Each structure stands twice: as structure tokens, then as C-alpha cells.
Amino acid sequence: MADGGPEPERYILDLLTFFATGGFAHSIVVHHPNRTAALSHTDSIPELWHDWWNSTWIDNVEIESIMRAFVKNDLDAFQDLPQPLTTLVTSIHKLSFPRIPSHIPSYNSKSSLPEDQNFGLSPKKRHEVERMCSLLKIVSEEAAETGSIVGVAPQPIRHIIDIGAGQEYLTRNLATPPLSFDVLALDADDQQGEGAVKRQAQLKWWQNKVFSGKKKDGDSQPEIAPQPDATTAEEPPPCSGSVTRSIVFVDQRTLPQAIEGWIQSADIEQRRSGVARCLLTGLHACGSLTPSVLRSFVTLYRDQKDSTNEEQHRTWKCAGMALVGCCYNKIREIQRDVPMSRTVRDHPLFNSLQIESLHLHLAAQITHSWLDNPAAFRLGLRKIVFRARVEKLFFAKYGGEMFKSGVAVGRFNDATYSSWGAYLRRAAARLDSEADREILLAADVSEDDERNRGEGRLVKRLELLHVLRCMLGPVIESLIMIDRWMYLREELDDDVDVRMVNVFDQKTGSARNVALVVSL
Image (cartoon, rainbow, N blue to C red; front, side, top):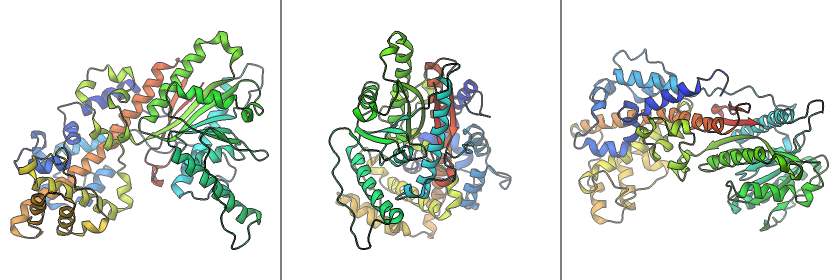
């Protein structure tokens, strides 16, 4: 699975047990602060919470101090910390998949992207592209060795399919020296493709101005040609790879069709020799795209394995994959995509887990970033708590179900959260019902009044609840990742190496940093 990682079957059992219905962790996940604030009006707090919800400990400690201790797993400073919280935080750190970046030698002797490819890239995106390029270079070399014939020098892999290519930041660097791959960039969104074409034109203008000296001061940028409707290929410069882009909604049927059309195109045909061995990749393949790519990869593997008699007619073969997923909250079909493996799906504890959208939203959280930006942490807390308190104000009318009742407050700019009163005024202006607006405008906004001490205690508990829920996110993500790894392990032969690689450094802001890597 990964060097130093836990034993897979036992790890899965521990995760399922931790989140099973009836447990403390499950109760934290399924009680959103909005609903909890509404329930507090009737004292209907889960029984499992009484030890910490009713404890006076929390009233005497700043939430930022609690957050730092919990994120660092340094609980010694709190001698009277309720036992359920101690057990929960300890278990979170024990069960979260290790996220320290793996050692990946840079593909570039300068250990960074070529300077003329940096245009428009944030430091975070530069880090992701450089590390992903380095990983793919290693995977391509591994796959070349795996697929070589004994006594014959390995043939280098030159073809990569970038799935969910978006603005093609990764695509461009894969096709540029020193890597010089031929790359098929696939995306379901034609606007992303148009954006990639525009960016490439801007990049060429910038390269000419800075590196070639061809651009005169005062010259305007070139007109951006519209993207053709069909698949397009660019004429590669000498010693470079090529980029072909296509608008495709990727599934088990369309992916091989897109690759076949690309490999047999005139541009690629004249550049390849024999059967083209291809790698699949995706840099933060969003939502359900990652499960779709994994299923497509398994289908390609099976087709190649079952059609040995047709080997002489092949123009291409899948040689491996390096895939990083993201945006679990955008998974379209939860029951189909989570879980993917039989090991998790058929486990007796899985049905009690009751995975829903609440789990997937939390899986996208990254809590260690709070340590580096306390101001953002405090602002985020205030946004969560203010919205939850609004739910409490409307409890008598909507029973803690404002969203289901079609009443939406929405999001505001940061200045709106400067005070509870300012937030109520802005929220009231958003509501259609005069009666609803009156409920908000009539609310007591004094923060220090004796009457609001109970409200202050509620705020403290809602803040802590939000911290606990976010801290559970990496554990939920760990379950999703090990399930996907196990799916590949079940569907591929035992001699196929399937591993998880911590490709990015989360400190750069790249929260989803684990790649599923396979070499065939």
C-alpha cells in the first residue's frame, strides 16, 4: 500500500469500527452545527455528548488553544479534558493516513519547472505540476522496465493521457523538454479547453517577449483563436512532445475510443513506432471523475489481458497510471462510488456507517492549515457559528430545516461577519418573507448582556463541534483512499504493484496529496 503504512485489512476494520453508527465519531459527523444549534433550543443534544457538552471546562479555554492542542495531538495542557474528547482526538491521529511527502527525485536537473513554463502558475500549482511531472517520469520508467522483453532494451513510454486536464498546466509541462511526452488532454468542459488555448497563446507571447527578444515594447498581445469543435493537435517544436486536446466525458466506453482515435491520428501515427504504451494520469480529478478513471483503467487492463490473440492488431496498450483525486463533495452517485471495493462494501460494519454527503464534505477538510493562519481560522469559525445561530432563531418556524424549507441565507463577504448584528442585517436583506426578516431584525444582538450568557456558552460548543468535525475529515478521506486502493488490488492480478504515494506537500496548500500509482 505505502511504505510504513498500516496493514490494509486491519486498517479498514479499524476505520469502519471508528465510524460505525452508534459511536461517538458518527454522532459528531452527522450533527451539523446548524441542526445542533436548533436542537439546543429544546435540549435535545445526543446523549453521547453530555460529558463534554455539559462540561464547564470548555467555558474557561480559548477555542484557538483547543484547536492547536488537538491538531498537534498535545493534550497534556488540559488536565480536565473530558475523556470522550481525549479518546476521539487520539484516535483521529492514530487512524489518519500518513501524509508526509514521499521522496520523489525531480525530473528536472534544476529541481523546478522550466522558467518559461511558469507563466500564470501560483506557487501551489508550480509545486503540484513539478512533483506530478517527476512522479510520471518515474512511473513511465518503471512501466517501460515492466513491459520490456528479457534481453531487449526497454522501449521508453512516450504517450500520456491527462484526464480532467482543465487549463492544461500539467499537460504543457509533460509535453515540454526535457520530458517531451505526446499528451492527450481530455476534459468534459469545453470552456476549460478554451481557457487552455487562451493560456497557451498568452504563454507564447510572454515567452517571445522575455526569452526571445522578439516582442517590442508597446506591442499588444495576439488575438486568441477560438478552439475548434473537434479534437485538435498542435504542431510540436523540435525535440518537444505534442499536445492534443479533446472534449470527452470520460467513462469505460469513451476513454478507449478517445485514445484509439488519438493514437491513429496522422500526427501521432508518424511519431510512434509499434504499439504505443500509454500512461493515464489526472491531477486532482474532480468528484466522480476519479472513480470513473479507476473503473476505466481496470476495464483496459482486463481487455488487454483477455485479448492476447489480438495482440498483433493493437496500436496501443495501457502501461500504468498515476492519479490524484479531489472534491469528494462533488461525487454524484455516493452509493456507486463510495465504496468501490468489495472488501469495504461487503463488510458487516459498512451498512452501519451510512455514508452520506456530510461525510464527503468533511473529507475535503485540512486542519493543519489552521496553525499557519489563525485569523482565517477565527473567521471560518465565525461564519459557521453565525449561520448556526440563525437556524436556532428560526427553530419555531422551520424546526431546524431552513434549507429543506427553501429558505437560503447564502454566503457573504468577510466584512459581513464583523459582528452578529451586521450579519443579521445582511441576512435579513436576503430573505423574501417579511415575517422572516422581522425574526432576524428583532433578535437580541448584545454580546455581553446577562441574558446572553447562555448564548455565549452555545457559541463555545458550536465552535468546538466544528473543530471536531473538521478533524474527522482526514480520517474519512483515509477510508475513501484505502477503499480505492483495495478496489484496484482486488481487480488487478497479484503481481501488479498498486501503491499510494504522497506526491504533494500539504503545507503548500495542496490538501489532496495522495496519488494512486500502478505500473503494468
